Image (cartoon, rainbow, N blue to C red; front, side):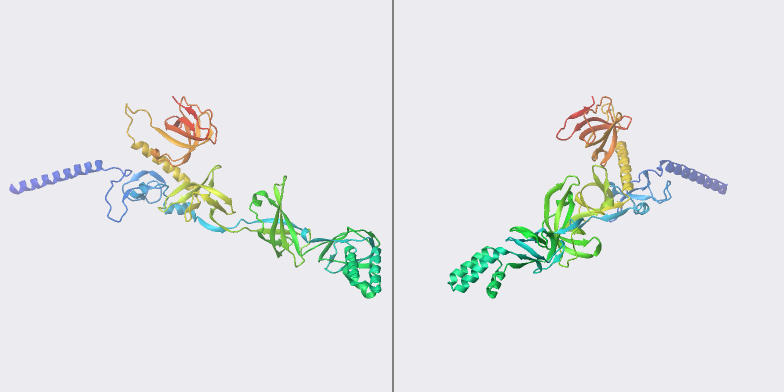
Length: 506
């Protein structure tokens, strides 16, 4: 009997323990949160980052309290750390960056000169042009250069002139020397002959031979090309008549049509490299001498005159030269042109911060340098900008903005009878477009809603009017939650020199 009672007691205790375990397990399972909940903030060991929760970057809404495989995508959950919660910008995991092909480049300084190419036409240097004239009446007995554009050298005979007016003064000098008059009278006669433009060589020859000389030879005063021939054999000449015009070829002009936008960067004395258009292997040194003060109204160009060294004599008028004009190099901040997102009125780039997050930033651009752009404002040397995948990062930024707005609304207390009106928010921006249903505004950040700068379509309150507004107007506006577009403006005020309230609701 005692043994039977002991067995019965043991069985009863086991049943009670099993039932208690069943109920305890059930209560525990009912009190356990599902997977898509925020994990409790546990204390992390010193030196380690505290994990708030895990999530799927492609479906960032649901939160999980432990790592594992995502139920939405074929990928592992990614932890979200406490120090990331207060970090601004968009967080993109390295795996996603690699899959999306996001590439970055560093903003750097480069020594760049204001250089450009221009095509110039070779012309004679007018400063090297000389005129050959006679100062006595006479006749051309022999013409040595018989056609224009002939090349001549200094001292070469051009023509022989017979001047009968020179015979009388020379015979008078010879007679005075034979009569033995004082030397003062002979010297005065020589001076009178020089005043009549009788060449000194001709006077000396007449004194040596004792015979008056009426024929003399005109010689080329410089090397060059005979660009003007004004006489022929037997022609009569008179004082002041230009018989020949010789243009030098040691230096030539290259006259180029330069657009006015580039001409403002030209300065006298700039060095150029001239390349023969017909043969790129032949180069010449040149210098900018003059910018002609005249603008071609039809082409909006100015003429620039470059002096080119032509001691080799290979350049002749009419040839084309490609002039490589280079200014003094200056240090400029540049970035790849593919990194810039242009919105029509603004230029934006996606900057990678030291924390690894991405954020949009507005910049001011300078000169277009081909595959690079000069940066005037908005970036510093060493900043990393996204050159490929900017629009994907921008989409992620807009998604984060929407989720942040949802969290902000969820964290707000439920409206009571005293606070049943929606909250009013304020921002500044620029009007992009206006239609019957509402207004589209590119506005700055809204810290209360954790919104970044973006372009957004707002509805308008029932009694709201938008008269007096037009696209491009800078505005300050107030908006609230509500309306068919989820957000609606309640007042819009221009912010500028012509500022004034243009719309409002009662």
